[in-house]
Length: 332
Image 1 (cartoon, rainbow, N blue to C red):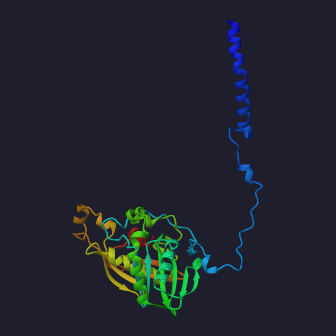
Image 2: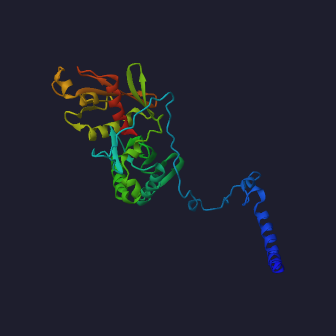
Image 3: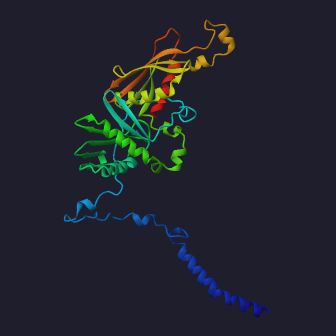
């Protein structure tokens, strides 16, 4: 019996030796698999590919040029900002794919897409119109034709773009209208299903706190915005006209582009939350709104937004911050 078992045991010896050799090979570099991290330590870059000078330059270009539009930053400590309310819930403030902005004689487009996505559409518009392209600087977002100059740059709201169409520094209304129609007709194919269904809350991200910052100076709250004051006024005017349309609660009374101000009627949160007992024992027998002036002031290439009480009612620092947070949320 023992001899039979011995013969069977001997049969497994070659297999065991082969397995040991295999595992020893797999276990090199202190693991079952070869660690390739060290393979790149001594790697050196290869020389860049150089095309011959005799090539046809019209046939070689960036497949997906991305305009490099950098936002300026506002330095300093940033106050903690409470999350803004979603714009798209029952307020009618979900932005269209293409919208017109204007202040005075200046007009431009705001497109609800990043410059890297809009650049190709702008090129397609120029080709479709048969315009003679004289300069195309994708990294600067500039496209110059014999008829007009197009400038593409980041807009105030995160993930959106601005397009200017000018000749000799003056806006061309016909060009803006034609481009708006062209982009609107193609908006369905330009927006993914996920982007189209997302709330505008996604556009109000607070990560870029330096671009729009709520600050306190003494007893006053103010908002600093790293964009020129005319651009900020046009953007606020657009959204105030849409959102401040509720008489007795929030209402836009006047817009003054010359002085860069707005006058609004606004019921503060502290007033809205007064309970019946507080109302009975106060001078006001009902909840009331009050008149507030929103002022924009230039600060170099940036802007400062303030909320100034022009009524006889009290307007605390918390009330001021609440209103500024709501208005600044339009720009995120």
